[in-house]
Length: 498
Ligand code: NAD
Image 1: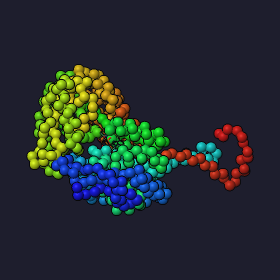
Image 2: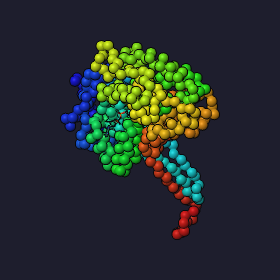
Image 3: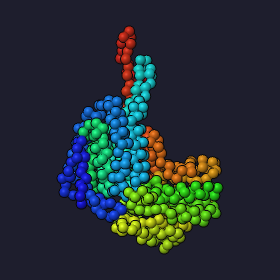
Image 4: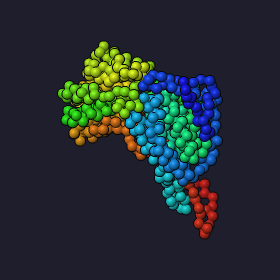
């Protein structure tokens, strides 16, 4: 082990004091390259205290001061795209172009935060009664926390902190312990942009650090993105401690392909959305529902394309798909494929046992394609989070929609068709928070909000966009009377005010 990833508290790097560390692995080689300090309760408390102290002035800072810092941060982020993408590839394994895409999507939210002035304008009603005006304003909450997953180590933190700090809050981030370096680099760039010490802090760790954030009386709100069981725990625990919570969970995203769809376009989309980032995306398509008699032709078109995907180290420009995050995860993904035939699936492509020459210890798995998957199969029911695509068959549009809506998850879904009427019906009938029409991964742009339904989100607010501003502020309504100097005193009136 060569490097140690430290916490970032009060504007500087702080070595871990708990004596506990976690390994960070290069997924392409399987080698442990770095260790990351795990925070104790006391270290989390130190980060929250730094954030609380910083809130005293940051919460009072002018909008111009905040946005100028965010504009400088935006420029630095833009200049360091490649470097951050390389950090992501080294610890996550995704290919460099995909890591660059992740930074670009994070940058979109920084763009939004640079324009927070417009979103925080408030509302005013004049003369609601004689000489009385009413203003609705929104104010920051104080210290807010973010807990993020391994699969987007730069983008998901940027779904949260740019808006939170633009609104005047201070932030404590607990990134994934599997790929922690990008978040520390973001902290350094924020500091270089002129962000006052303590406004943005990073504590690394596991359940100990997370649970302390959920319970800490000075943490006013918690944003979480990760798997469904942990999202449920975060929502329950943080709510019980009186906090505002948004907890985004896992997914099983379906793509409904109607018989009239352009099957080449549908197959391209299914392959890109299923196997991009090795399927480790919460908006990956993991189930295709073929309607009518197109199933065999569609599966064949998917197979032809999927077989050509080049798998290799993320830092090799020839690679289109990298390894999985850990060996344990790779083995779990492989177990779904190995059990698939016994569960009644037709295994069209089996990616288990795949390796890359010269990188035999990497966390490799090839492409898997399962056809005629019964809804009872574990491969269908669970979020696999790997390069495994299930194809199901439905006789009609109605059967397909019923199947999608029976899933406990409701993150994203997509329809592929040339029929505008069917697409319109699907928009209204699909029980998911994000719907694509001939778009397989309908991730909303920064100025709309991202979030699922059902077991894919616990809490009332989606993330970023207008919901982001709403989540990180609380409303206040101010009623003002300024009598005209010429008015006579109103006198005492015990009646109900009108
Ligand atoms: P995860 O739930 O294992 O971990 C997420 C975070 O929670 C990490 O910071 C981790 O340290 C922490 N954590 C893990 N176990 C914990 C526990 N017992 N108590 C407290 N904290 C704990 O998720 P992951 O494996 O890092 O990420 C993959 C998951 O995230 C997938 O399920 C994916 O669908 C989901 N995800 C969802 C979205 C979305 O927008 N809905 C986006 C990205 C990822």
